[in-house]
Structure formats: C-alpha cells, structure tokens
Length: 273
Ligand SMILES: [Zn+2]
Image (cartoon, rainbow, N blue to C red):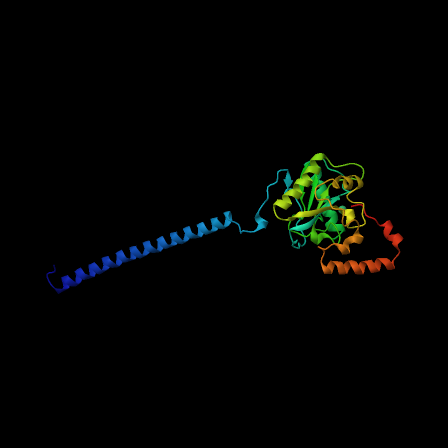
C-alpha cells in the first residue's frame, strides 16, 4: 500500500533493486556451476586418456613365462630409424654373437647388449642393435622386438626374426635354460601372431657365408621343432618363395658381380657372427 504517488514510486524502485540483486546472485551461481561442471568433464576425459591408451599392439606388453628385459630395462639407445616388419614372419634365424663372449648374469648381459648395440650403430652404421632379440644369463633381451625389421641376416631380414644367443658357440653350447628360453620365445612369437605357426627355423650360415651360429649351436638347433635344412646356403636364396622380387633382383645383380671378382678373396672374408 502507498499513501501517495511518490511513496508508490519509492516502493517500486525498492522492489526492482531487490529483484536486480537476486538476479545477479542467481547468474553468478549458474556461472560457478558451469565452470565446475566443465572442470569435472575435463578431469574425467584426461584421466580416461591416461588409463586407456590407444588400442595399438605397440602399447601391449606381452608377458612371458621366462625373465624378459625390455629395451628400457637394459638402457638401450633409441633407434635412429625403424621400419615396420611384415608379420607373421615365415622364418626364425638363430645367431651367436661370437663377440661379446657369453654372459652369466644380468649385469654382464646388459653390458653385452650395450656393446653390441654400440658396435652395430657406431661401427656398422646400422639404425639400432641388429637382432630382434638376444638371450644370455638365463634371460631374454628385447632388441628390435617383434614389430621392427632387423639387420641380422643380409637379404633375409624382411622374412625373419633374428635371435642371438650371446657368446661363441663354436665348440660348446649355451646353458640348457638359455636354449629353452630361445624356444619359448619363438613359441610366444607364434602365440602372439608375430611368427607364422608353420615357421621354418634356420641358422644364420644357411643364408649367408658365415660361421654363425657356431658349429655346436648349429648342430643343436637341427634337433629343434621346425628346423628346416632349406635354404642350405645363400646360393639357395633365389629359390626362397617368401623373398620379394626386389630382393631377388638385388641377389641376381650381386651374383653377377661376384662371378666377375676373385672368389678366393670372398672365401677369406667368411664372417664369424
Ligand atoms: Zn649371425
């Protein structure tokens, strides 16, 4: 109720001011609420991203039923470059390192892995340690792994995984445990889909003029499942059906060149690893 016009005007102004102040409070409250909701959504999305990495095999760490050291665990240098290996591969190639000699415990084997990587990268000028995996001291070590093309068997890397048993196995054998780990690693490769279930197992000397993997180890692997006597020497490579046309072209050109040079010189160059 108002007694006169000016009273009424005063009352209406008071009401309007009250309405204005309530409105400001409500708007402020809504803004704060919206900010809080946005923050919650952001935190949820970021946490989810951290706990659920993209569905890519690179992020899956396979578990093995033997001791396995990843590149990070042996303090590997990062590769200069990598090339994706087409899997499952039809071949597994067994090597020995010749040098460094056999290692008996984790510390020794880590040093062996690092010296091989340094030699391959700094002297051979390869992108990384050449082997896909190495084994020593009753443990397996990740080299280039399952997904990356190796540099362990010239002209044969694109169709194989290379496994090196650290040491010189010309006259003696690695430990029974190391030999078992090599076979379990191959079985894991088959189970994970990186190695063909009907893969062929060979020694390095079957695809290159080399003494690798040493006479004793070469004799041993001939008793393993999937051992294949073919190819028997690098001269059989042109008959390997899994090798690409481009690799065979390189092999043909190389064969022509070798025939033109002194073969005695080549015989002197037989490598050890
Ligand atoms: Zn070799």
